[in-house]
Image (cartoon, rainbow, N blue to C red; front, side):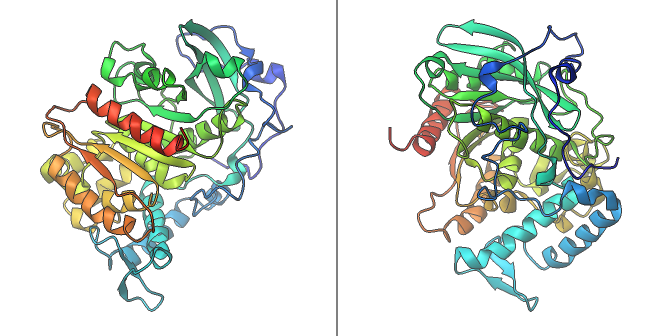
Length: 422
């Protein structure tokens, strides 16, 4: 697919109303006046997405016209440098002379952060460039009043002509008193109901963190994950090399959406997710620094420890190698020691922002001891940043679950980071 280097002009009402995502048949659509706040400029592009916000693309989508050759070159570049670096000793970096050095300061370590982003994109595909932040063209399809908050069924544009469905939960108080509050991405796990579970529509109480957070006064956006539940885009046809990167882009555009809302504070967001949502949030935070705090429940261990390294899980369309995740990882079947990145590096790439991890001792998907090793490695990087808070890990005695008491601790962390003056 050829990627257009610039976004098209803002669509007219008739252009917007002809699009629908829900395969079950969308409700009649209408423009939402509340979603079109004063912070949105004439093109519909969020003005707060600026050069002052550090996003992490190493390649622009405009460059993808070069096709796979560019990605192959990237993979070769990352393999050359990353092969000399340990997946676990993440405070080390490669000097300009090609020597492995121990970083003594955060500034010295930035070279390693760059190489991590190169390696992630070599496997996930390119993080789209700024030119692809086209008008969101937010459409509201339904609104339900639920006590102290409203649940809005919406859709927004992530690329020209490509819309995604989502839920937006808004405290009624911010709609009436003129004050601003904080926004949180609430990312769902692998579940037949997809994004519905986090907003209370999936009969899954442990997943309803969007409902619990909106009751605490947060504005919550629940976007979809590709190739799950009722959202099945053709990832490759849309130009993405993995479902993981498409999900990251959906989430990043979701932050753009939150930036346009007149009742949301911009460029300092939270992110929370369980299982699939747990690593989805971690990946997104690695590429979008507007996320100030990320909560990951049952979302990760070292790739090398995944199901104890069983080779059967590293076949095409198995485990992490599925199209909805990162199909290029299948190329490392039988040689996991050559992986170009792993979770110690992904967590380190988020430093010095806050990370909270739930890793139950009974989780059969992700090994809690592996989580501890991952976090120990990443915290060596956090220690380089003055004032940075080390990654926090909780180990409840439970299965692959986000229990209420751990969710409450996670919410307190979000409060501390996003509402420090309260």
